[in-house]
Image (cartoon, rainbow, N blue to C red; front, side):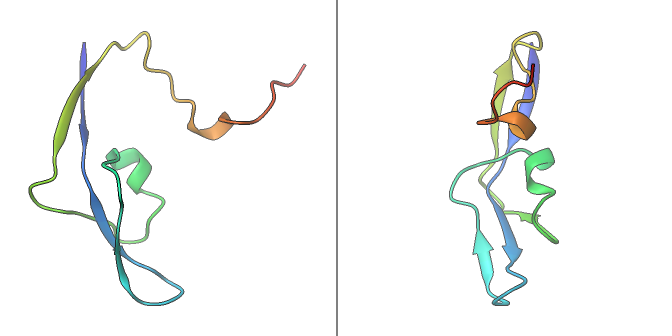
Length: 67
């Protein structure tokens, strides 16, 4: 089993300049898309995932398979 940490994150919206927070806890890998994202203290969740079943589907979710 693999342990994965998930956090809520805060970041500055480049368009408005406002500080925003993610509504759900996401991994550090997912948070990289937010500029200067910082973890919100006290929001850590650790989940056990089976490495064989833990396939990164983010880049292709909702895209039909190419033949």
